[in-house]
Image (cartoon, rainbow, N blue to C red; front, top):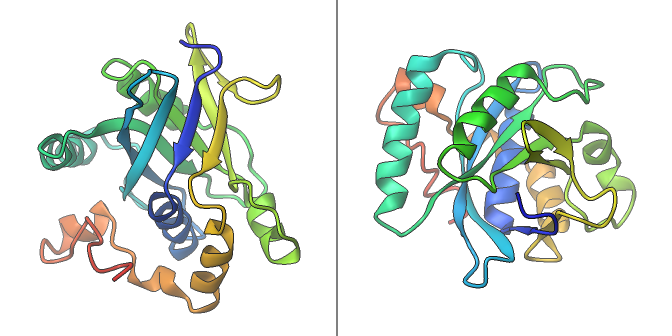
Length: 202
């Protein structure tokens, strides 16, 4: 792993993950991060995200189906899976779940610099009180065989590409935009539902 790699997440990718977790507040949810390494190799750019599951997080067959479809679609665009997102079931749970580490481990086999993002419910709750522009996510990166919280010593930082992302997110929260989010669980129940969420920001 590179010690001082930067991770930059685009606004739409960021907001999609947060809205997914808000739609299923009483469940753990997950998703994958789509992107690429920068030309100089100093950063990982997360350009999109795909909400995966809210009911069958730990089940391998649905995950494998989802990853095949995701890799096929984004591979044609020169993008790949560069990380994983997880939100715990309990609001006060800040531990990285075993299932998150396992899926993260799987992704690092194909993309060694993968990011593992955990929703920080406290920061999300405080969002409306201040003007914090930092992500409401905790970044974990893999060091040897261990997932470690990044950024504590100035290394491996996560930033949002657009500085106004949290303001836009608050607007979407107030208009209950999360009701429009479709994840792979929804798509597997009804294949007419768009797991790409193409119309979400239209």
